[in-house]
Image (cartoon, rainbow, N blue to C red; front, side):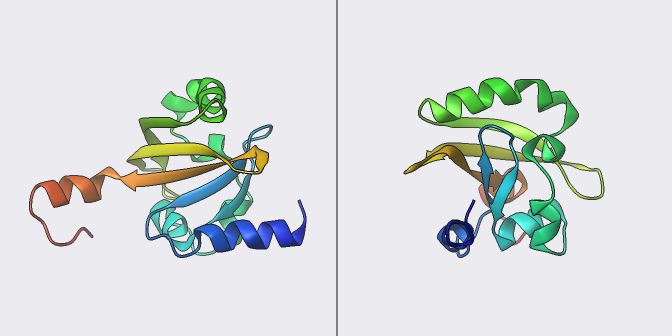
Length: 129
């Protein structure tokens, strides 16, 4: 991909306050992440996540579903609950909402909604640590 496209993808998701990842359909390579995703997965720098792919971040018990999930995503969109791996190896449960990137048929954007946050809000907590 060109540097201009990389910059445009990052700019698109940079200020979204929930974890967002843009990945390639053919390889599941991560091409853009926002700060919320870096924090969610426990990394320090964007480059650390960009060196990974979606399979690496997905909890092992969900990796077998990746091919089917990508097909659904590129056929119009996907919403599901999945577990992901934090840098420390612990599992993080999140609602995944994924759609193809308009104008870029080989790219998908995934928004992750941390279920710890939604559960805390449902239970009246003001803050989740």
